[in-house]
Length: 218
Image 1 (cartoon, rainbow, N blue to C red):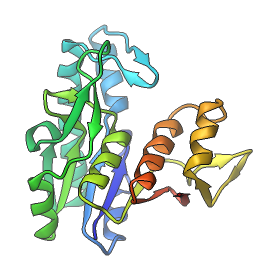
Image 2: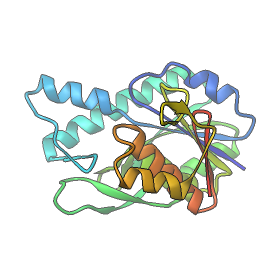
Image 3: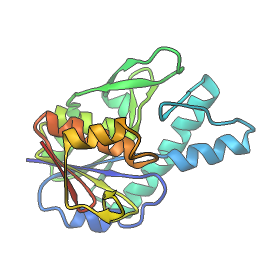
């Protein structure tokens, strides 16, 4: 059984160690949020988000593709020769178009042959979260959908914090239903929200999920 490791775009630090620490076949999915926003600022474009999703016009999509390619190369370089760079839109990741947000998609669980072949060969597929179109997909959501699609045993979200904090303390476990409720009532906000929702979606589909040291349970 395989493991999906979701890493952020902010830093490739720790990804090689995280991959090396996993005994099972591992697939890495990464984002590029900070790089995209930085490049948009350089080009005089103002980021616009609707419910945490980046509005992706044609000029923004160009930046998204360039930024994801750069992060993919950096992640692959950090992992080493076992890494296989894969762009989601080129290998057949699927998503439904989200109306009103430009080139944005909701991911659909899928199992691209390129990912399965790499895992079967003992390599590490490194996947960017683009879907056919191309459509820009939230990396946490795409990682969750890919984990479900390939029948992964678990998904692990590598973050720059130890895990999920609630009421000022680091929690070891949180139920998917409780996580959803705390997101809905505004208790959680910011970058932890898409991770919690993606982890909850994975758990509901039979994939174990961890955010740092915090296990998200059914």
